[in-house]
Image 1 (cartoon, helix red, strand yellow):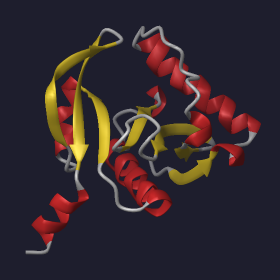
Image 2: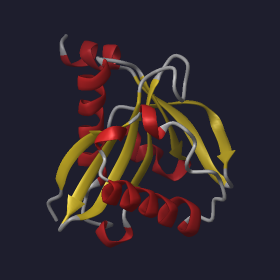
Image 3: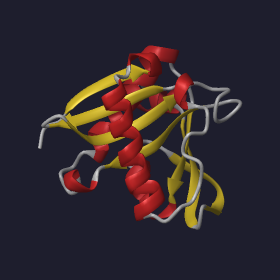
Length: 159
């Protein structure tokens, strides 16, 4: 499964694509994970929306935000999902890598903070994120804050 990757500002999303994004976010986060929260939180208008489509369907998605929107001092990548029909196809890594590229192009190199589901810490660590603080409950699911520091990674690869 080879998705087509694109990134859109809110105003660039067609009505149909926005509807599909919101529908798959609700399918995964509200229905599947039984997390009852307001998904339309006012941040979508400030975001870059990273979308991987397969046969015209949203297969993978993230919402990329600059610092000051979700976290005062950090940019963020959130609402990370793979649609049920696309799971097991290895889309998580390219989704997160492309999302970081979009963030850097849009906002410059930044520290990135994510709220990772605790059972996915090893996956995010393999992408360079480091756990900070303790595991906490977010909507009934254990989460851990994780941080990506580009300065740290630059020092590792440019010794």
